[in-house]
Image (cartoon, rainbow, N blue to C red):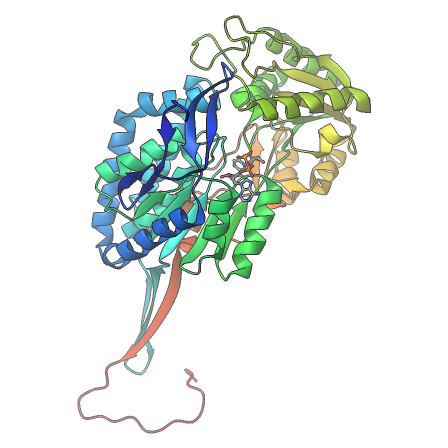
Length: 501
Ligand code: NAD
């Protein structure tokens, strides 16, 4: 029996710590297992669904304003407990504390937006659509909904999902990443403290067994997923096959185009944060710079090399660190393997971050920034999502060549262009086949009141995450047509199709 603290589930408002399967949760800065997380079996997930189903009738009929007030209370609690939550994130994910604060703040903004649900749920009403006939549409909760989330934003991505789902009157089962589950669970406990009735939000930790139960149980009406593309595709296919509404956000390979007229020092600063912030473990990270013209490429590379030389890699708890470790040992090995592969494929490794040692953290999963020049389509380091601190420069001659590359890539999550030319920027934003586009903005992650989603194999489904699309995703439209005939007036029989002719 391990003596490590156990991370369990939250079901029906109670902590559940029974179950036979569990796995270690590591501190990536030290390489040590510090906790064990329970992996829910089918019966445990079914217990969560039963609790959610039982809580649904009363919660659905709770006035929207009262539901929204819980979100207001939660916002206050999240702000109060921000330090505690961010320490949990850094201890399991590895990202630097200031970055954890940024993710939590973005999550809080989603909670804030969910507190506007009464306004967002207002239906549409038309009077006199026919003789004494009125018609309206309303948006009704679906029932039990579920979310499956990735490791890289353990606070923010769950907060993209369940606050709006429950504010719309649904109950929710959340299956966080088993690699860094503690902050996610803590936030759910705070939701209870904020006044969410037991059973409205349940958290089950686990792996494929838990996910497959959510995908197949007929009581679950909708599933939101964020994670890698192969799993997103699986979730979408399986969920749809079982009659569920599914949105599945997948991986990315975001290109930043730098035009010859760009403000290069500005672009370099922006690229540094976008490529190496959170150790490159962001779906909106920039792993590829497409430089238009050799002079642009040379200037950008010179700037990047100078800035990388100033970076400090270390524990996320150390205020001097700009970048922490990668999340797990296998992920560290995988990212390092891509760097080896890039060299073997013939790209020019200008800055080699392999072999970095952080004093006092010799067993941590640290990889310092790596910079490649002469990356070409067809190379694995161009084609595949690396999800680490590896930035590649691709040299092209024209903006159109850059855009053709981006359009041909299987992913279409985010992209950006650095330029001072409004015409070029407009042509780019109008035509590029990508869901989220920045102009001189490297991480164009939409704010909470716009929706988030990529194109192509970065998203399976029709509606994007959070923002207005979330209200539509977590509700179904019902349209009611009503006539109250005047007293004593009886309608004649009509066999033709009713119309306003
Ligand atoms: P992942 O796909 O490995 O895991 C995501 C979730 O799926 C986890 O909860 C995990 O337990 C579950 N899962 C894993 N394997 C499964 C299987 N075989 N069957 C059923 N469920 C399974 O992703 P990750 O490594 O945690 O996160 C990184 C990935 O997420 C990257 O690809 C990144 O681009 C992507 N991501 C995308 C967005 C977006 O909005 N598009 C945002 C954040 C992260």
